[in-house]
Image (cartoon, rainbow, N blue to C red; front, side, top):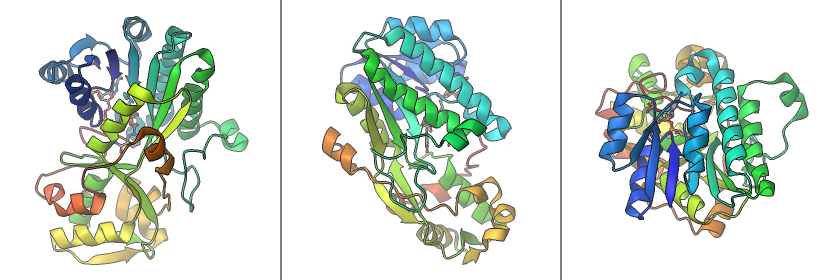
Length: 320
Ligand SMILES: NC(=O)c1ccc[n+]([C@@H]2O[C@H](COP(=O)([O-])OP(=O)(O)OC[C@H]3O[C@@H](n4cnc5c(N)ncnc54)[C@H](OP(=O)(O)O)[C@@H]3O)[C@@H](O)[C@H]2O)c1
């Protein structure tokens, strides 16, 4: 297949591209900068220069492809107060792909998130498909993003083999600049490794390469309208994460009260206390997907999070 990948130079995309090429596909990657273009070319992909806002470029490149994997997201503006604008741009890109792929039966795989769909209980692939009308009426980036995921799924009725891959909030691995790296940075800065309350609240997790493999499987064989979960660890208690970080940095592991969480953790304070476990049982059954990379605790224990001077979300590579 000739596969158009947006976000091909990103954290997950840079895992997807080599796997597609190794499987014999031809990859066309969207690149908005010289450095991203160079990285894609070095990985063996064809480069399509452009941004998420160049809708004609998205349209023409998708039209000349046998399938699309959509991973690009404007994290740079999303994490500096512009989440709604980022979600709006994502929506326009998805609408453009829908127009061009309509009636083609070609695969269209789009990234999505798991955050907050059914807090406090294990979210499955069947959950999260009804938008809360009250929240939807209020608008807001996260609602827009969830609605966009539903739009992707609705393309099944337009003869597009569309699917969404909901990513764990921590998609970890060597080189991660996301939430785990941010947590390590916060621990370093505060001289303690913290968790909120009793720290029993859980986060799902997946290794970047296992997530990348799921995107490739979805491209190859997901049925139209599939919701897939890139979840290897159903729910890792935040306290366990804090303990590994404390051990590696030789820092005390302490409970932070919910009231002090924002002061202590900065922007992470709004997320770290959430209990958001997620299942991938259906995904494994449907796709034959089996994570093979280290789980989150083992990955943290490998030490790479503690050797580099990682800045975490807000650094050069940011994501949600
Ligand atoms: N990683 C996670 O833990 C996680 C969790 C939940 C959901 N997700 C979702 O999964 C998808 C991929 O995430 P990721 O972690 O791979 O993100 P990432 O590392 O931040 O990569 C984002 C990609 O989008 C590209 N991009 C950003 N703005 C663009 C623009 N205006 N025009 C064209 N391309 C643009 C970036 O290009 P440059 O290389 O030039 O910057 C990069 O290739 C995103 O939709 C993300 O929200 C990720």
